[in-house]
Amino acid sequence: MAYEDLIKSIESTAEEKKLEVIQSAEREVEAIIREAETESSAIHAQYLKKAERDLILESNRQKFLARQEVKTEINAVRLKLIDDAFALAKDSISSIRSDSSYPALFEQLAQEVITALVGEEIVLHIDPADSVICMNVIKKLGADCEVMQDITTSGGLSGSSEDGKIRADNTLECRLEKIRSLSTLEITSLILGDPDG
Image (cartoon, rainbow, N blue to C red):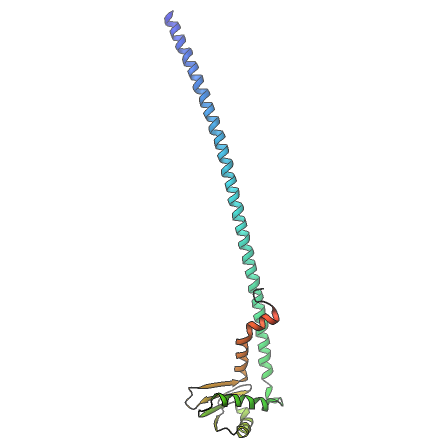
């Protein structure tokens, strides 16, 4: 019987050992599950924070793009208004020859060209429509100039040295373009507000 007691003792010890191993494994499994849940919560919180940051960044990017689009549209409207204003001005100068003040204006423009080319053999370039006014102005100013009726303009004239190296353009179209290039930003700011909105 001692043999049977020994076997029962071994079986009993094995059963206790088995229970201990199972309980230990269950505790380890529970610890692993708790740790995994804790890690999962931390990872979930990290992903939520990252998603929130990404949403804020995307929202800011979309707002920036929308503001830029609005600014671009406003600037396009501003430039269209300026284009329209200068087109209207160009149309209005096309009939300036019929204005009674045109001879005085032509004289002033001719004087500026002659002054700019002082010391040169001056060639005045005019529209044929201004030939009579130009001859009267040259006589009045006592200027020694060659006159060529070789340009088409709404008014005014241009001049050059005889060799063509020095030019002075004083046509109304040229003056209008100079005004436009020098004052577009100023016009935009004064009349329409700051270009940046």
